[in-house]
Image (cartoon, rainbow, N blue to C red; front, side):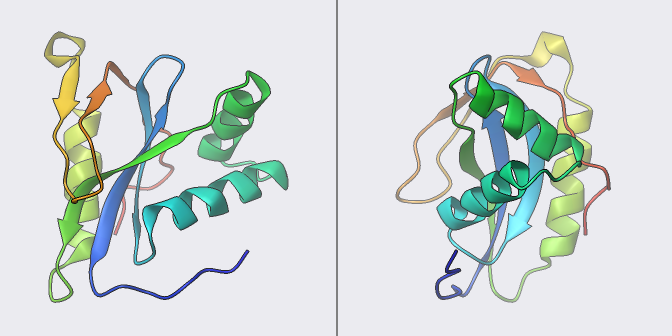
Length: 127
């Protein structure tokens, strides 16, 4: 897949299982979020064994496409490492009593995202 041009900022993004609105992954990218999601899907279809790629395969097998959304935009001079770690830590501490959460749009092309569950499959703490 062609990765396309990089943009000047970093995005901290979430991958959502649309079947039950579960946030399953937090990552970072310098690319457009749609391109990064396609890369995750391709890795999943190639048989990657990381928890997020296994979950993506399960979504696809059930007829769902994972959704990607922006959690935070990090300016070019900002620390994506710090923000990625912060977001992973934040979402790991969300309790069921705090859900659902309507995450507001972070970019002009974004819409509200409803998160009903959090089951982060990140194997690292980010950064």
